[in-house]
Length: 213
Image 1 (cartoon, rainbow, N blue to C red):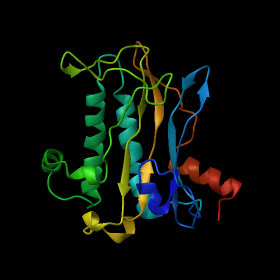
Image 2: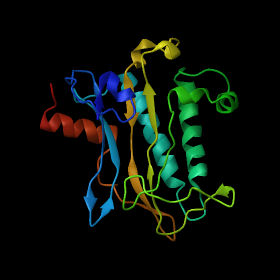
Image 3: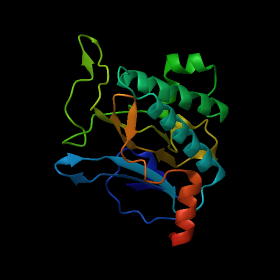
């Protein structure tokens, strides 16, 4: 869980920073039931409303997640799902002028990795990062019915020397959205679908309940 600048730090754990108006709060959490684990991440604005820049990044991450979830089916691979995620993120980052060049150049050079430095999925089961091979016989392992994996794209825009060319309005924006997906015979089932993640849903909940500070 991290807020403000700490939302850009993967798996931040110190959790001693006061939440401030204008911050995003990123919570990566899970629960266990019947010896099985879950792993879910949601990101929301402390003040109850996203800024224009926060909303742009959030909606880009959400679009990439929805595209990745749609790609989950028997025969697909974790590698292929990651590629779908990256393609959506890169197009959005170029549109927002956070990256420059052509889509192909950015993908080949890996320039997007300063904002998205982790993979899209991991196995989920009796552990949060469950055991299991991602490759078989030197090739990505095809998904099969009964597999469960996370879909968790993110963007993390830290205020640092590597991001000196970034519009300062985007600094300290860290967004990750994570759901748990079951591979079925006909496609997939989002096991955590009922946890709100739309911009309108989140803002309505926060404004209805009162947000802090």
